[in-house]
Image 1 (cartoon, helix red, strand yellow):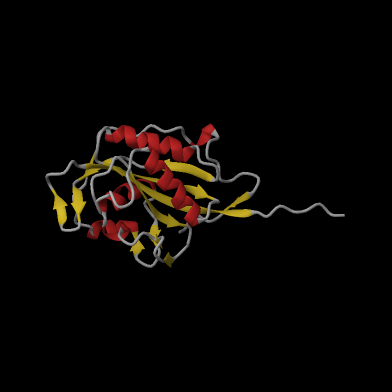
Image 2: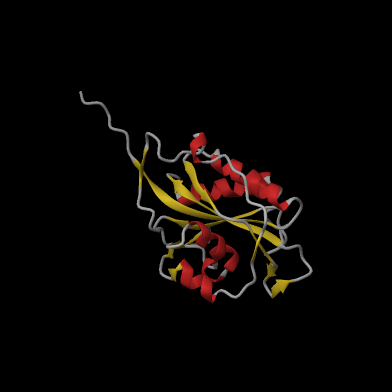
Length: 202
């Protein structure tokens, strides 16, 4: 009798955008990074510079609200998009974010994590839209993303470099970089015995 072959799950390239505009913003981002790096099936491969950006509300920029610190994380995952979304929501919850009826749309956040790209997945439903529907116009996503993946392309919308040139919202580089466990720590490794790497092209 032949031994059963384990199913090999391909690892998809993933891009996550992190933001915080309440409390110790840098600490919130670093706690999120550590939690993501420790997630089974998710491998963090690069962390961008940190940028600062004004808070945006449905009606536009809110100069009275605390400014955001933003960063982009890239890596690979064997998790399905819905499972990855559940992971990011749990990390947000641990970071003090309140979801549900008590949360203001586009309100201030101790922690916000957006799933920008998961491989070549294109979908749009009530639960999740991929690629992220507003990533192409947000300099606070595009600018740090460009820092770690200068040749990246947003599926169906063009290169990150071209999109960044068109984005008009203000971002400035923050002087302090994020510290994180690093890919050599062994935490959050997606390419383990049940995973095989996929092309990094989204």
